[in-house]
Image (cartoon, rainbow, N blue to C red):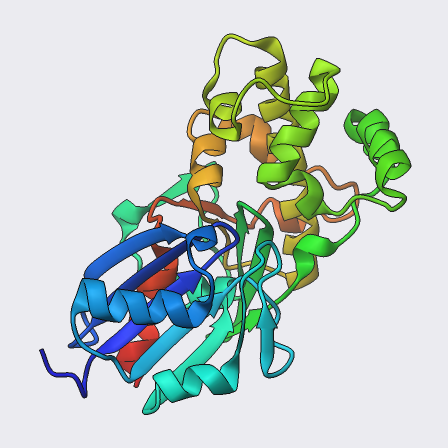
Length: 308
């Protein structure tokens, strides 16, 4: 192994960390996934991976984190993990690139093969324009791609409009409990699955895990929870597609999205996405794609490593 050419690629999400290395900028080796809560610090996580999984120190790294990049101190939005960029530079002394996790993922889109993407509906790309990548999970991430340039956002924190009749009572309960308006991330996320199910079940604690709620095909409240989240996702995609003018496509990634959308009625989903009295003509032309690749951040890191 050529230590000078080896690059560590890592994605630190809200719950999990995914790591791998590349030696040639073309392939990934030593893939490893762990819970963020199992590491006391980012430094411990990276040192442990290099010593125990790879077996040598690594001086170059590309790292995506579920957090806005505002300064030297980085604190993950949905995790207690935080770190200082300068301290990490002592570990990765030859090269260190830190960016938002959805920004990292978005770099992979152009390199995906057709078999790794599932089109939702029959709309195909008919006009060159911007793309957006949306990923519901522990949080709700969004990145845009404009003329090949990836731009990170915190658009998951936009407030949900109070006029959505399907969510009117849920929003009212949330505002009473939290003393604030809910954001799309509050409901289009793991915590949102739990909150909506508990509301429908009239309970404080769920008797199902989030994965069980989404997979359950018998319990009526599980089915209703899934229907509400799929509906809200279509609404959110409509809003952000219009904001970004995403005529080259709306891409959706992550395990939660794949579970949610694997058996939906594509026509119904697109009908809600296109439900605009003023912009329907534009929305009719915007394609929606579900990305089946779950290690999208590592793939994005590989593209950045290739570019040098």
